[in-house]
Length: 104
Image 1 (tube, rainbow, N blue to C red):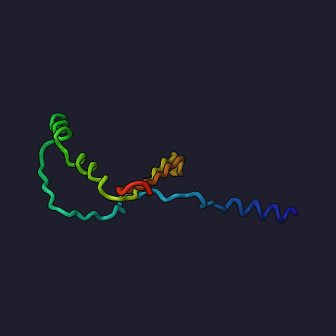
Image 2 (image 1 turned 60 degrees about the vertical axis):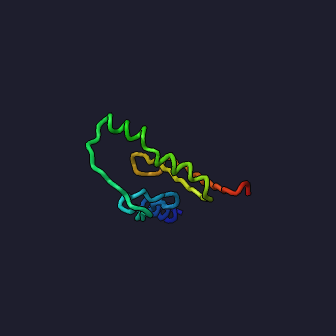
Image 3 (image 1 turned 30 degrees about the horizontal axis):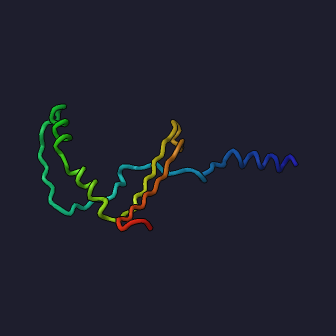
């Protein structure tokens, strides 16, 4: 009986559980984005007034958000929070199905 107990104790010291471990997001693995149209980029010094003006007069995000209702899509979001030991502390998963032709 002592040998079995000693064996279990010895194996528990070297055991590391991997069942619930989730790999952390690595920003070096971002997917490539392909743009359909030409992009005009202008450099200008960013200050508070410039930022406020851009936010107030930029309608591209709002227009693209309104255009989403024209298309059927599925959106998935996964958000993880980590503790100081880099283990998952909390998580949220949401899945949205939008169908522009009415209820399913």
